[in-house]
Length: 143
Image (tube, rainbow, N blue to C red; front, top):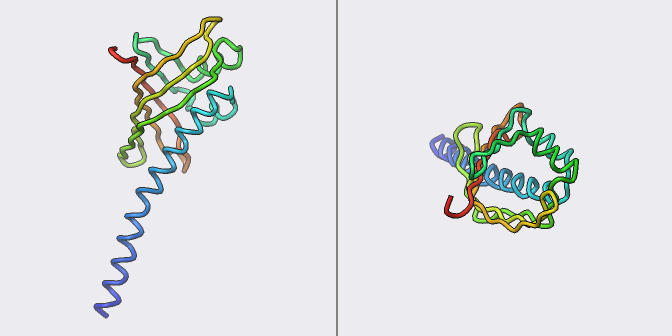
């Protein structure tokens, strides 16, 4: 009996230990897919990922919404030839994931070429079983 209890406890604990890395990998893959969507101009993916009240704050205090982010891609105002995250770390607080890292983006905005590297913080929340982006912040080096 004691052996069965120990085995059951071990199975439960090992299952919980494996859940955290799987959840971390899931969120990191969403971040990579998010970058790919920006690079491809995949508006449909962004509409599914970002909540309608999504807010992105930039270094200078600019505020972009899900609608403005999507509109920039739809209209061609911004086009990315590269959009990559690196050095990402994820922390969980219940059904909320905070992701920090660096983003390197290369492209053209309103006819002007750019090549930027920023530190970012993204906040994702699991809503009805699906991870959704609710907020982000990006700061240029020195900002």
